[in-house]
Amino acid sequence: MIEVRDLTKRYGDGTVAIARLSLRLDRRITTVLGRNGAGKTTLIRILSTQLLPSSGTARIGELDVVKDVNLVRDMISSIPQDAKVLGIASPMDHVMMYLNARGLPPAEIDGLAEKALRELGLWHVRDKPAADLSGGMRRKIFVAMAIASKAEVIFLDEPTTGLDPISRIEVWSAIKKLRSSSIIITTHYMEEAKELSDEVVLLAGGRKVVQGSVDTLLGRFGGRLRVEGPRGRYRVGATHISYLQPSEARALIGKGYSVKEISLEDLFIIHGGGAIES
Image 1 (spheres, rainbow, N blue to C red):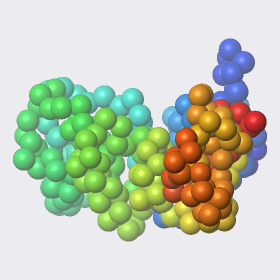
Image 2: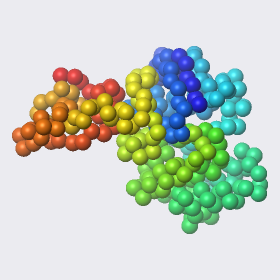
Image 3: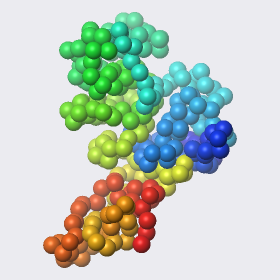
Image 4: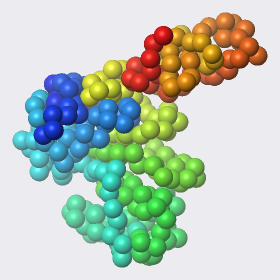
C-alpha cells in the first residue's frame, strides 16, 4: 500500500509540480495518467526516493520515503523515463549486474535474468552490446531489469515509449505475469492503461482529479457516445466534442458528425485540463 498525504513539490523557479496531493494506492497495477506537466514523473520520482518533496509525506507500507530511504530502496525497483544503457554491456550484463547490486542470491540470478529476457523478446540478443540494439530494445532492457528484480513495488515511468506494437504486447504480457509485485505505471497510451490497470489515477496540475477502476471511470459516461463535429460542448483545438445518448448520437451520423465509443481519452477531455467548455 502506498499512501501520499498533502504532498507538494515546488522547484526553485517557483514551478509547483505537485500541489497538496493526497491519494492511496493499494491495487496490484495502478496507472497514473495526465498530460505533460501534470506531475506524473515528479510523483514517481518522489515515491522511488529520487527526489525530495517540498512538504507532505509519502509512505510505502510502513516506511516513509524520506526518513526510511534505504529501507524503501531495498523493496522497490524503479525505471526512470530517461534511463540510459551502458553501451558496451549486453542485455544479459545489464540484468545480471542489476540483480547482483540488489543482493539477490547468486544461485537465482541466471534463471531470473533468462526468464525476463525471454519474456521480453531479448533472449536472441542477450549477448550483443546494447549500443548495437534499437532504441526499443534498449528500453526493454530496463523493463527486464525491473521485472527480474523480485521487488515488492515496481515503478515504470512510460515503459513502452518508442516500442513497436509487438514489443509493447511483450512488455504488457511480462507485467501481467508479475503476481508478487505491486506496479505503478505512467503512460500516455490509453490502450495500455486499459489493458493493464486494476486502477487508474488521473492527475491535472499536480492534483488528483479522478481515481478508480477503468470500468468505474468509464461508467461515469452512462452509456453515452462521443460525438465530434461542427458544434459540441467541449473544444480541443479545432475539434468540438459532445457526449450523447446512443439514439441522439446516431441521428447525427452523415450530418457532419462522427461517433466514437467512450475511452479513457475522454477522461482527459472532461477532467484532464486543456479542453475548453463551450
